[in-house]
Image 1 (tube, rainbow, N blue to C red):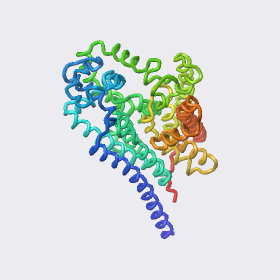
Image 2: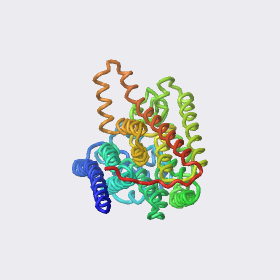
Image 3: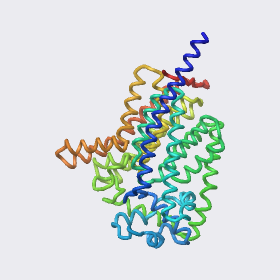
Image 4: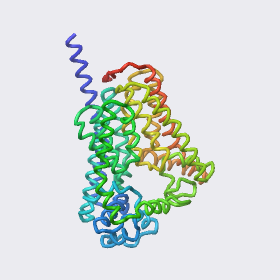
Length: 448
């Protein structure tokens, strides 16, 4: 008997090691890319970090970070070889689109010279992304270590765009994943609360609905959600007061900046006339192909999301907390949260939090394990940088109709995310019904 237990324990340990080795392979791709960017920076390197850095720079100089002219004045001394950019680049740089709370995290970097700040941001954001990936794997490894390792490694290896652009989503999502690990493991809880607060302050639309789960889950989870919100307010308040002092009209200015980049035919317009819709994942991209009218495609997108959100909230409020139910609830809301408003492909790195839900369904066996594998694989494939690029390139080769090819390139991603959210929501409802009013304790297990 003792020898059997020892063999099982050794096999389980070896299986976890194999899963972790897969993570190292994915992390190796990111590290190699980071080294390449540091040695040979391209014109697109740090592209998405620039608007934040120079908005923070403008704020430090007492300028209005939401006034394109003021941001441009802060930018020009450091422009160097990029002084003469296209109008689109100039608009993307100077029309700041984030809330003042984001600048709380940016200002410490804006104090530094541009060449130092961008390197520090790249190293920080990618280091935290790798750490978050390891912790996401650890959560799924309790149930299926190799399967979890394969999906996390795939996501890491397909994170090239967010690495090159240095988009804020990388840091916001990573901090959210690390925070959830702390809270769900019940370890370093105060650090988890603080990290979730930082994530909310940086980019609230990414972690917001994950935070909502903890608020609805009652008990200690609700207390931690409230503490995170209070901490986020405290973190963002200095920047909010500073912006309000130097730019008392920042709210209409922010609205104006949004209109400048989301108007019909502009880069962030989800309609067919946009040049940037190919990388969006929100549902408006799909319904705009039926009718290019914001009132039409936005209304349908909101209705679908609100109905699914209501079912999700109702299930949380009617069921007792358990690890299994929690992971399935989070796996459902993560893809759904990307659908109602503007999100880009790099925001789908939040899918890291769906891996534990997949692992749980996988060890339960039966048909549901294969359906979950299919749904998860489709979502990770279409949202991956390399795999998605291969799909779009294949369409261009096979399709004779440019408009049809463009539609087939952008429509699958939101639809796959919608299918993923509906599937996990269905699984969550089923498991919540089975647990009934009993407090179910999930039993993690290692599959060899």
